Length: 411
Picture 1 (cartoon, rainbow, N blue to C red):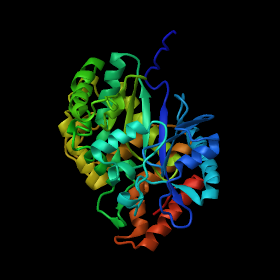
Picture 2 (cartoon, rainbow, N blue to C red; picture 1 turned 135 degrees about the vertical axis):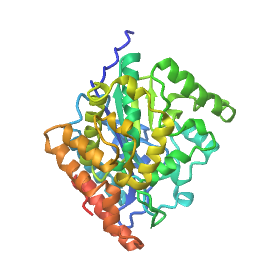
Picture 3 (cartoon, rainbow, N blue to C red; picture 1 turned 90 degrees about the horizontal axis):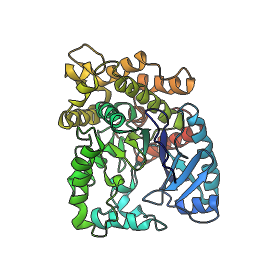
């Protein structure tokens, strides 16, 4: 069989959006992903092709993932496609008194008592994870994200794309944070999902590293520095080698050489696909400029250490768009001559300087995010500092309506 040639830089995109299934009346998590897939396919399946998208299971039974059915040539128009599938899923969930809820974490789920692991098909993988890490905490069963897959063809394209992605990763929570509530309370963090994401496999630290990938820019170096280290470290816990695959790597962006893409994982899922796709379009527009060396040379981008980038990432997790960048060298990577600037100001400058598309699908949601803050900020504005269960339910019910209607949430 002739091997298919890899897509080149920005020649295609893969998008994945995860949603939790909840009860319509109480908003409690509803572990019925298998029943949903059965109603659509006629039997329980792990994945279902549904035209332009696929539906698939995740680790737990109250989460369903929607993703593009292979690479798509453009991001424009995808929001409407995802919205159509969300509405179809909501119709299928009606007999179960269920519906989809957006946002990256359920605001009051108790994972110790409410987690139900997927029990079909590829359950051996999930069982192996559960045996090693115990998959009943928030860091496993209460995380919903958006992923963006970007292709490359050959070592040079991989190196250029990986360098650019590393540069932008620390900034993503400032526009994509959507998880400010945990265990029924406001925690003080805008992105609790990523806080759990970076800590939930601490038993084997090399799996996540510092979230920001190491500065490696060839396939061979990536294999030796990152993947071989992970496989060696997990081997005593995984004698059957069930988990020793590229997807075990849990950095904020991971290389998938099996399909020649890099998958960015640091996006919280938003209130509706229009918001997710607007963020992704802006990020792609910035990455194109970095890869094309519009502002700075590829060699300069490679010099960023994962430690410095990880420190910035941690600060953005805490302070969001108010986080101040005091590193002129970092700002110069984006063509900015300044000694300091907030992350919010940087994103606004990037959005104004790069046109990610003239369509209202992109600019309408982006204006809300840039003017009112990420979804986490807007949720906090609606909730107040100490919301009770009734207030949480009212706001998150409105969030569910945004998902069904494809509309933005305003605080």
